[in-house]
Length: 348
Image (tube, rainbow, N blue to C red; front, side, top):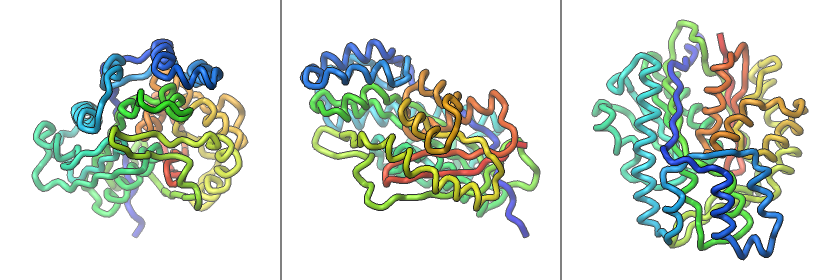
């Protein structure tokens, strides 16, 4: 007997209250990273060329003026991530016509802070989750976490037809802004990253849903651990971001994506990808031989929210659904490992 399709019953996003206008962040960065800008004057161009107008942060820009240690960054992460988790989850459940008591399992994806007990446990009472709920916290997927977390949630739903799975992705990338570091990667990250969350409600059921999840796959390239990730020191996380990333995507992305499309039996699916940055989007279009400007929803999300890491691709999916998403599509993101995560979607 064929497995029941996994339906997407609700999808919602959330951002924190503090707005970071790109022009204000650029002025701030010139002051914080003055020595780097003096050494590399063209670094200032990244704020103009990033394709970003504004982002959102759990902390106001002036919060970053003072030195912050692990404990302060962690507290800011816990406060901000819990609030965004609840906001996105409640919106997704409301869209599905459900409450927290209907949820059987939670997948929580986050790589920008450490929480033990995990975020889902911390918000359980506030949300009203049942005591018997299954919890699956996931750390370390980075920007690929939105797709991989959704894939994990779909597998759980498929294994227990009829049960409700809530997949929540929360990333607070701005908390990695560091005035004590001044490398090129730090300046570039200050021009790109923002905070956000997304939640998806899933259930395997016989009825055809407006949007359902099909096959999923990952591809990890060997010898690529230095392309993306975190370093760790007494102050906090430090961004690891290789300048070779766009070129790597141009040369290496096409093969695993095309193999997935063929193996999944998809015919000319639409690509919905993580908007890692303007150069990354250009590289994806080049790699997959798409007409320049094809990734319109991706650029719109990037312009209004920056790179929020894992939730970003779900913001793009939300935009695409509002415009109308006919037929087959492939959700795609790249993250530390270095790994491509892909997922098939079908819109009725």
